[in-house]
Length: 365
Image (cartoon, rainbow, N blue to C red; front, top):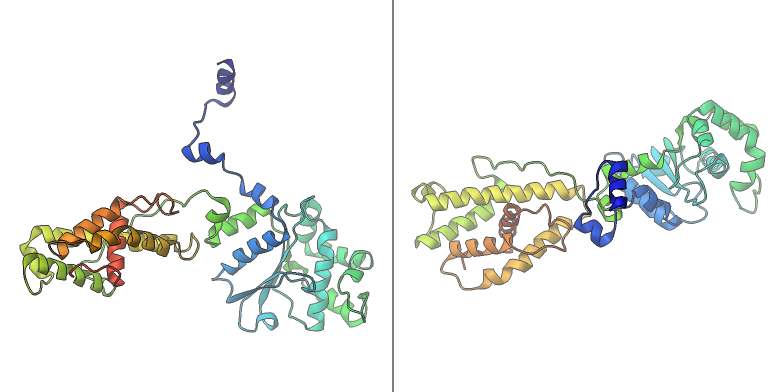
């Protein structure tokens, strides 16, 4: 009791564990998670990030291992790839401490040397990415290009020349002649060593893999759009399926949308169905860039698996089948699915109409 009162006095409150925290423990800071990555995991993490920057790059390349010529992950801005405009991401997975100049000096040397040889054009940006970020000394150097250039010249023989290539003909790369002139004119502003927090924020913002790696759930979902007054081209199939179901329910050959004005119950059902369809479409778009590819489609598969037996049961008519199937869908236990919390009943009903739109559910049989 005294310990609890002391805790309240110190913090101002006692927080209550959530069910997830009780079962799995508190959520780890992503900074601590990436600090435990090995070199391969860090490169995969970086490649996931760069590959997701579709607005920046036409394509990416991941070339792990030795002999990479100073490149781990490349982002290509045009079709010329290494002969055109591109960015370089060099992964440095050191557990002991943040990156220092000695860690990136050979990599800077490789960029200078191989771009001088024409193996590739100089990248527009060259990022040195590490789980613990860069040391203050390296940050100050990289953020002041003239000082970085001066450091490269002064430390060339000691830190760089022997570490650029291990080919038989060239053991040391001398900073002399045309190469020295090239380095002297080189734009050292391309080199960057961003903080790990910045990298994690970029990963969270630009990739669909953040929740898989770090958890935390999805952000609040915006309100779904209301359906337009007239049925859109994308809706025609499932709406026609509903009209066929209504016709069977009324014992008629066919029913049009205008006919529904005679039957308020059916008119309201169509309106609710369209709202549900648009809610499910809104959910599809919402999760598209925030979860792994196929996440929404797997929700559709689970809904289909959960309602198909209900759909295949005998029903008096297609309208009764729709009601039974959508009622089953909205009460499904989808606890194991990552979208369970945000797939509200209306969205689950909407998924049924998406499935009808794709020909996977049929109301009039």
